[in-house]
Length: 393
Image 1 (cartoon, rainbow, N blue to C red):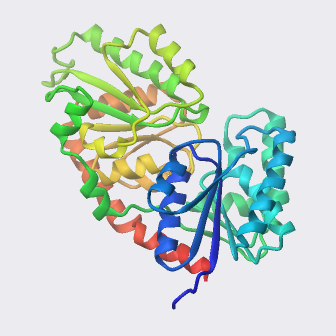
Image 2 (image 1 turned 180 degrees about the horizontal axis):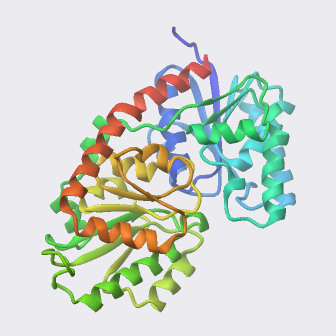
């Protein structure tokens, strides 16, 4: 079916690159290929805007919107979004963050947009919040749900929560998982040797990698404490020595964390406090992060809150053995045999899981193979695109 220039406005709170921005960019590109007239709008400066402009996608900056709850800026942003809608006259508004799920839905209703779709990567009320903030986020989702036609969750657990809390959009709630374009992904992956050269890693190092922006939900300072404990255990045994009761010798282990964000000072202070400069590399943000995945032997995601994390999905696609906390979609993605899932904020469980993989090359290879198979069979970008485009028709 040919679609003659129906207009879609994609709205997201910030342009700073992350999983939601990755989806918006790729979905906007796919919609444009299908003949839609597309606009992407986001607050603040960041990589999303630059990438859209690079490939000719109409991009606008929402100057007044902020990530935090700020009533004055939020009212100004509501007015600005309404003005943008009146100018572009979209047939569909596609909302892609918690704040836009409220402000964007209200603006689109006031401007009588025919269809309003809200894609939530993970419910904000599941974060570590005080009672008041938790209530505000939960109430905001419930209040705004009837102002949306379709709510899209990325895994069944979030769909179940929406129904549990009686979120009622005008049409329906559905789940469309994230997916990977494996042909493109594989073409971008650097070889192990080249990726390690870019990260200044040794050929024989055992490298444990993480890709995560420095937000509270990513738990990076806590993860550094876990790394410190692993290092202390190795020191007690002796680098290069045999692990007791095994023939296995401790390899030269390096940890790499790729990311940046508002918790940068907390991360840096914890890093210096624990004296991890010899074992942990903090690379900062890197636009080429996913191309470097083959530099890692093991991937770790220590979050306290997730939706369906793109970095974990990409690590799986790169055939890496993964350790993730039991939040959001992580267990659903990795079960039954595609990775190790541990309770959130359980330091002993994370330390044990990492040590287990360090000493078991066969297990690393088995988990990596199963992780890739899960992506090939369950999490294809082509399926996500097809299911999403159906919502636009």
